[in-house]
Image 1 (cartoon, rainbow, N blue to C red):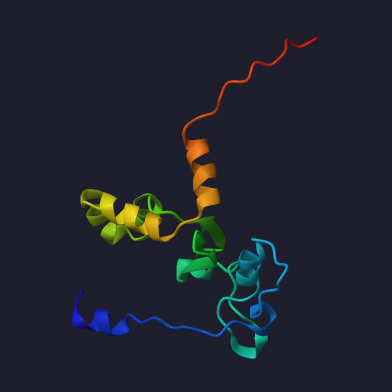
Image 2 (cartoon, rainbow, N blue to C red):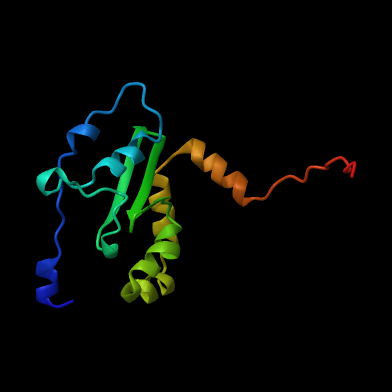
Length: 147
């Protein structure tokens, strides 16, 4: 990119909105997702930008939910939608959002980077679930229908 584009890239951090600032002691796992649906970016006149806002695809958020060392989740919030984010999504999802970089991601040696991402974002419960749904199901014999 040229110098002008580099000068326009910036990252901004915000303090969370009062309604979503304090995590309740007895919260459920989905509390973080709901907090993002309440406020991502404080807005003018008490109208915050939320995870539900599409903004014509102009805002992408990676939300990291850290409960314990082995219970870290990452979600991608984009275009009014929320999705659990894993290393393989870097090639499968982001390459379609960022068309200019798609050939670089698809054609590069990124497998080791994906494994590093997944090793740092550990969620042992989810990893076990993910492994089970990706290895297939055990066939269950159902009794014949009485019809």
